[in-house]
Image (cartoon, rainbow, N blue to C red; front, top):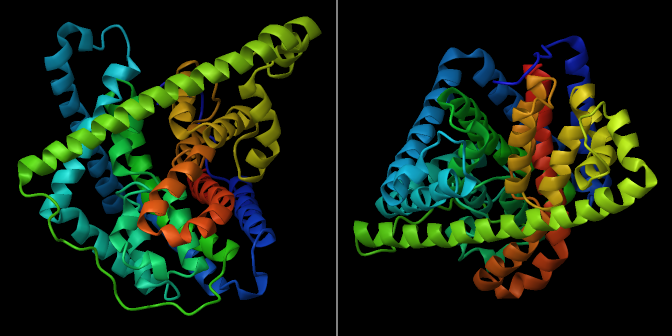
Length: 441
């Protein structure tokens, strides 16, 4: 981890602050619950216990840590394969000698990963893995339906608009709590197709750093499943009968052959790449516009820029959007265990992820990490988990569009639950970061 000054280390203080963070997250969920009396505290305890055991296993059980590190290396190798295709298309322009170009070295990964996912789906590999995770979730959380378990497991590998397709025949019959969990799982997790891009952003051109972040991104994706169940069932408890019959992802082939599956996945990946590139261009330009008003006009003529530089010790260059988000969320960052010196940058990243999206936030995190703005490695690790999810305002619209096609009769309910689901999805990532920060120290 280049640029890190020191490691905070595990201590009684980190443990207490981690517990305080968990209580804070659960307290927010309890405060906004639709029916506090019907919260299943046994389910909540099971989910938290599962997350803690998972983190302890990765950190202190050699075989578990080795497994995730090996899986991370596989993802990094897949990212490297993407660069072979990029090098063929762009030749010397694809070289990393002059630094990483996001459009060339990170975004093309979306195309390759989308093609791979489509191919594995055609072969039935992804469906079988999803069915295994779904079976495990239904055994660990007995108060969720088969359809819920299937979609939650699917969200570890697929996007929030793709995974509900696994249970599309059940969506029209889902009650409010079931549908809410499906929405929260979509907001609180990431798709496998974008994980490679995140690895490219955070790892840069350093293989060891790429493996480090790949391991934590994979861990965050798995941890988000029980976290989604816990927070969804707290915010919207189950009060209606559920269908507990086992539900499995269909292995029926959607494409006629391997080449058609690859072509379909490549086309989807291309659309995703163009969408992400356009979205980043617009959002980053918008931030620059707002920063020009805040820093270039207001801060310049009121003296706020100098004040901000003084109070942040030079970490913030002026009265910017990033500074404002960090200042607002700093107290919350302290509650979940972020080291005091790094509260503002980590809080700013969470704000950027929620208001804009996780791509913008990960890009900012990489820039700040390279510039040495983080004092503790713990802050970088917690930020990796904190940003790992689709919980942002634009995702509400995407979810409305996706569910509107699969279950049009549920569209009014989805619209009503949209903001609450986004809040729950954000809390899922916060809970994962809190647990990791508490145990890793």
